[in-house]
Image (cartoon, rainbow over all chains, first blue to last red; front, side):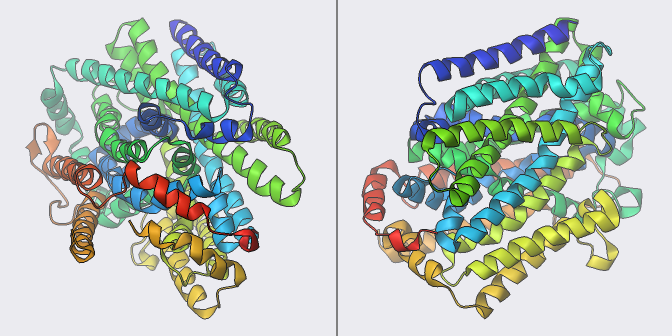
Length: 497
Length: 93
């Protein structure tokens, strides 16, 4: 019951922060509501971006991964994300500069100006489709953990409504500024709580090294790569998952929205750099907590293992502290739902509705964005109703799907010969291949290396196909009027720096 | 510093970033299947992975904040003003 009280309190605090943003007038104009008037300083940026990506997946999912699959999980969301410091900088430096000059507010804007309206709309829809499994993963994680922590007082299905209801309220009220402040506070909170939980879990068996030696004695495979006859954490599997997560991060809406919202270049660079560095520490903790969980709460399988984070907290901490630790995981999930749902609602409102109905007034866009927030949230709760896939796998599928837009983005900023047809065909073929692999072979075909695809997993195969299609189609087609004219903006000599 | 020297430095950083990224995404050269030794309670390859991650982080920090290769706030106003002057009316979709 303490857990329920603490989590409910956190929800109310988040709503209150957004209410303050609403009352202070941070949501009056479209610019304020959608990109916080480009006013966010680097502290808020760093923790807001961090929190908008780190999620139920990074807390509950990674501990579940560590519990089931061991140390190889470190390649899914820790060191593999450090390259984002330079990847994000190279890919989104122009997003920041051109966004300032052109008053961009959505991730579709650069694609619209470089490739034209069809690509902009396709991108919005692809990102929406890719975001859904990730948001579902968060909501599912929240439901599972609420049920575990409240001893069944709040059932899984009631839990599906509980937190998303609060998120929808504070997103609709506070806009980007409210969301960023809520994210930042939640980010600081869960970063602290994961360290506290790590300390308690490791001290349960006399410290980190004794705990790991104990786990190794019982489950030596968790410390190996290429176990289960070379199937689990083989080199291709590691590379497939590590690259899917990092490349997916480049292509989700959050870095675009935060680039537009940044007050300064210093803040932008600090935000991009800090993300990987903080992940290296903060996400390693839940992964290792999961590994250690094997000697504290043994025997969990499949979706059940998603509860390990809460169960080891309950087994090693006083009730109130365990509740706070799990609440940290909740805030991580909330802030990700927040960031993704908001980004997609903005995309739909500004990129799709504005294109279809140009006479729409700025105030109406804000109302529409609020309606889209509610609709996306409702659809995700509906999908999460019957969970069949663990949180971690759902998240990797989402990142892998959105990563196919990588080439279109790179081409927009760095390849003059890129064409709209190349971008559209590349994106559609990448998504089509991902869906095809999922339909034919389920999540295993998307996530795990396949012999008939030269040991690539479905994601990497789709990603490579998208890349080949992009280059071949761009070479075979002629740049149209829009692509030609966009060159003077996207390749302006001043952007060389 | 000349543009040519900057280009060379940029290329150098890029090559190092790519190599370290590959190492962060796959245990080529420092991992092996099967039994493994522990370093500070972690498998040796996991320990090396975290060290490589930390090294890449430091190099990124140097590139972004300690060289003249990256963008700085003092450059932004001039760049944005130049971009604002471009007439893009015909290209709007």
